Length: 140
Image (cartoon, rainbow, N blue to C red; front, side, top):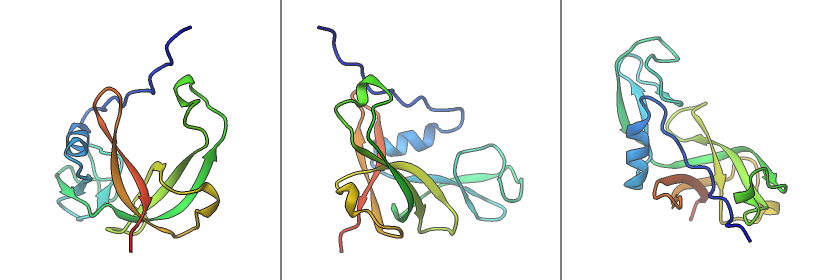
């Protein structure tokens, strides 16, 4: 009998290392343009809003709302077999209108998910050690 495959490991893209380092400290951070002060996701060398090249990594609250989601019922990778069903969701973060991340939504029955539901970031460790941001229903 063969060993189950490990879930794919995130490979930090050039310039995204501060994001992954912060995740390992259970903090959610994002680039914020020094010129127009807008957050941007994904990390990039130029602002996607004003094209400025100066930015800082800023902490985020980790709070947001579910904009849309899908429930994965068919494992597309051998490591996902034990996880189905699981939820992939688009989360709009509270810091800026239109600032969205794709992540997993955990600790909720897929039938109970609702549009605009408040969520909070949490972190789960990949078997390789890297912590990954996921979202769960907000408490309170």
